[in-house]
Every structure is written in structure tokens, then in C-alpha cells.
Length: 216
Image 1 (cartoon, rainbow, N blue to C red):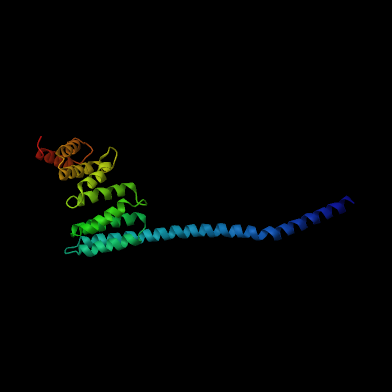
Image 2: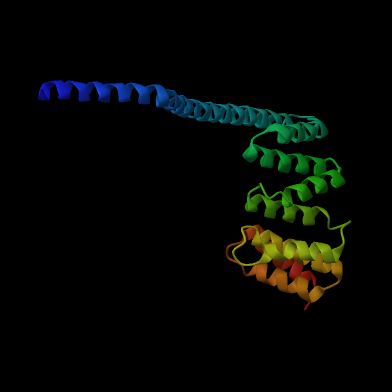
């Protein structure tokens, strides 16, 4: 008798297992398929990222080499960098924007260069290092046409200790101060730059000459 009850109990357990398999088996398979699809999607995403980065790198280098050729069409190269910036991944997008702006400034299209620098400076997706550089270059290229007070406010944060562009920013800040007619402020910035051992020798020497030219 105990054997019969054991067999009945075993049959009941097997029947419950079959019912649970029918009920939950589809869900279990779905979860497995979802995990596999997610893993495959992630690998595919990484592959596309690598492919896009390689394409952007090749495009950037090709454009850069074209600017080094004798008689290069720099205006056309600037447009090429602008197109690359519109479709490249983040890192190369930033570099391409900076290169496009530099070439536009070099070819006399200062307004377009300033627009690119201004856009990059306000782009929260860009690295702070490059946003600060864009602000520095904006002020440097807007010295002749920009509002002196606005330029001073824009360059001031870059002159603070710890900023990566502190040394060149001090030089530009001094030029802005001269534009404003504030000789004392210009001299202070130049003297600080001349004494800054972290600045390049060229910057320090230029700062000394400019400070001397301002008089005492």
C-alpha cells in the first residue's frame, strides 16, 4: 500500500510540473530570448560605435591632410569639417567644430567662426575643457568687434587658478582690459602671467613686453 501511495504522489508531482511548465515555460523562454537579444544589441551598438569612430577618424585625417597641401582650399576644408561635425561621434564632433571654426577665422569668415565657438561653448554635451577653449577662442577672435564688458565677463572664469587655459586666458583678459581702457587691470593680468612658472616661456616673455609697453 505505501508503494501505491508513493506512485500516486509521484504522478501528482509530475502532473503539477507539466502544468507549471506549460504555464511559465513561455515566459522563461521569453526572458532568455530577451537577454540574448539585449546582449546581441549591445555588441552591435559597440560595433557601430567603433565603425563610426573609425570613419570619423579617417575623415578628419583626410581633411587635415588636405589643408596641408600647397594651394589648399581652406574655405572648402572648413565646410568639410563642419559637415563632419554634424555626423561624427562626440569626440570627433568637437574636434571637427574647433577645426572648422579655426579655418573660417583664417579665411576671414570671423562671424561664422564666432558662431561655432559660441555654440560649442554652450554645448552641455561637450567636455568642459573644450567648452572653456571655445570661450577663450571666442573672446580672442571677438576683440575687435565684441562688447568689451561682455568679453571681460566671458574670459574672467578662465583666468582663475586651476583652469587648464589659465595662462592664455590671462593674456586675452589683459587685451580685453586694454580694449576697455583699464590699463591697471591689464598690467595686473600681464604681471601675473609673466610670473606664472606654469606658463610657456613664450607667453611669459610676451606678457613682460606688453606690461612694459603699458608703462608704470
